[in-house]
Length: 430
Image 1 (spheres, rainbow, N blue to C red):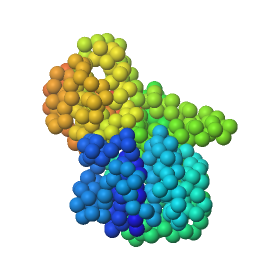
Image 2 (cartoon, helix red, strand yellow):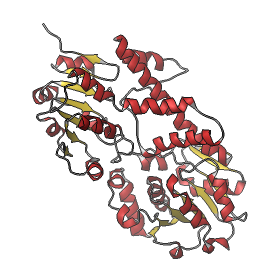
Image 3 (cartoon, one colour):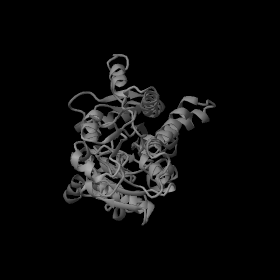
Image 4 (cartoon, rainbow, N blue to C red):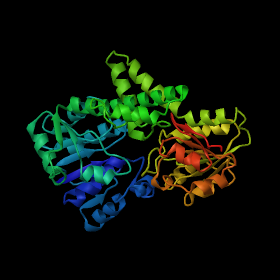
């Protein structure tokens, strides 16, 4: 099929690479805010496993072509939109372009993070002679290629048989293991995507509340988590307490869901609480540090492992580390930070500072001369450190585990002080 793909989001790059890979003829028009010359250099694109290699393969084989303006495009059978919420006007401008107005039978696939009902509005701009479907973005950052090419599910919002048939054919190569499409009306698909992320965020925030209570009561929250997960009505997924979630899509979807509630005349106290709890949890490690040193933080040096909002990506959008850094710097704390992928984008955001040193290779470099270590992002390289080496590097021998990936008793047996989210252990004295 001939596909015109518009956007510069991760979902756009992934769709461009994957559709070209299976033989479709894709013309990719990046959004003007991030043309290909700039997009090809960004860290998050290169950090996604397999993605850049497949983009380069498509460009070399000619199944993928990057264009700079709509006038360069051939008449497409499918228009695929993968834009951010702030780019709604750009979508309207594209679909209202006279070059498309006289065409018939095109299918619009809206893969953008737009409000509920936007697919219908965009379809109206194209005209009744065309068809539209909503295909909400469900990519997982850090494994975008795998989640597109080997999906476990896809929400497909369609109100006519033509749109469903064309979309199924377009994505047939990625739907062979089992039936992955969940078909429903367009608005239902758009709302379902928001509802899923709202539920996941609610579980995370609830578990973080329980972890705070466990801290107060002197209970190890891991016992509570295992007991809750063993209940078949609850399960273990998204029951891991931590120092807050981030990311561009997850955070945006929560705010969009709250906006949908307000615009429909409903106020969601639950969603407000979920977002408030998450923002508070981003300061959890700082509060634990404050408590340990009785508020005497000026002049201290803290090592941080992890800046990206999740392992496998270089993005720091709404990441807990940003809130944490501001809190530490406000108290005169110097930070030595290691992250295998996100250091360049962090540096670009905060600039050069005397109270920040960054490292991308050896995580132990960040710990040299530090008083404490904060684990913020659970990259695999951090899971099994040399505890005795850390004990010799950290002046106060304090480990603050923001993801509960370490065994408290084992860390304490190595002579370090462990503080997690609802978990703690001190070195044993003989």
